[in-house]
Image (cartoon, rainbow, N blue to C red; front, side, top):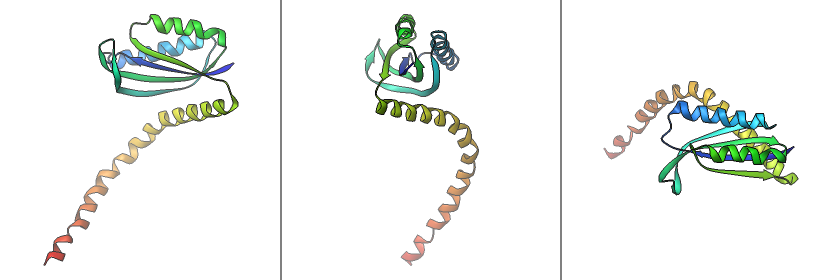
Length: 145
């Protein structure tokens, strides 16, 4: 099985539920065609470099997976007929150095998916630390006197 990366750009007009449905649909399509999904990176809605189908923005997803090369045509056919996907790109990683890079990207995508859950709790104390730094700035007027 070969290593692949599938980048999708979804229409920005989709609701959050529809975006998640499309993501799970693509994941199911990959698995039905013999792929093993290593990780999924949701990059959020971003501005496009140029208008695509009259859209200035798009919601980005990157799927890292391993699949037999014979299944890629079927995966791309299904992606191509989906009207909510405005752009896609499939990248194949062949060389040993490229596969090592693919593994790093897939692991980073897994880590970033887990990180927001861990970051939510520590963010609450940060605002408390900000007011503490403000009084430290107050001695500046004392130097004027």
